Image (cartoon, rainbow, N blue to C red; front, side):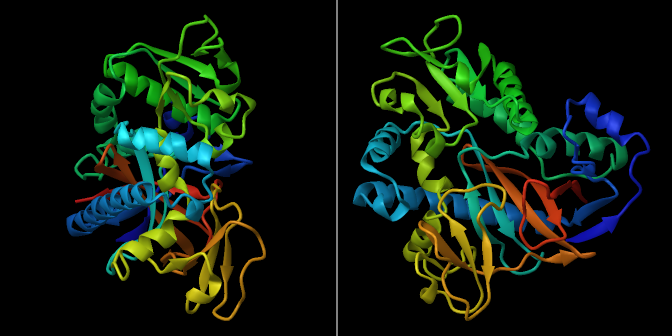
Length: 366
């Protein structure tokens, strides 16, 4: 695993915009970068793929243990949400996708930092944009990237033979692009699809409905479950016939409070980091994380003898510093489609914490 400085395509902005990638630059600074790429060998790709499959299996086992033992309080999940979780878990409602954030230096075992299992973004650039970059710039190389093909195939199960509605906050370019891309993969799987803004979902007194008053039988929502449960119409969730993508049981895995439970269930596992809801349980430097949060929000890195962050619903995880290449801290985002590892996307930043402004850098391997 190494970072390699390369010459970007002279017309790269036009090339990525032609794919529908409109947020390649944020506040005047490139988000998509192709003046560098990350280079792996096949053994390194195999290591990431194996670690991703292993950790995903651990997460499913942890979810089953939590549901069977009713340990929702450990994750800050109330009785109303727990009812939705349990029903979807026992119904075996299928999941679509997720992204694990891994700290990995290319030699030691990859370490799970968190599992973005409910509303992960950076999908379009990982699946489509970096693939077209590879074909244009390194056609003889390969890429760990079967995301698109696996999404299309997964929709054949998840779509359930029904019309699938797609809802997001479309005024957010990243959310809109991600949702429209997933809509396209669903359509390629043969389903009827319909997009709408999250605020356009209505309630008929019996069903959630779209703008044409059609019942929403199956809904992909790029909108976190904890936000959905805070909405006024959340009272209708238990009685509605809508099937959700992602299903409610994904609340267990997208919650960073899963990290202490993973460490409790599988102590010493080489792909996990020590984690606890108590700062004093973590020796040395630690990272304080809110139960819910995205793109680095609310994360604090604590020195070895630094005390707890005085805020509710925080967990503490042993610090696994991101490897630094050319002064850039590199994060591996490893994608899971269904239950199968599907590919990776690399993010990097000058800072130790990865945020929504952290750059996306393509990768290749031979």
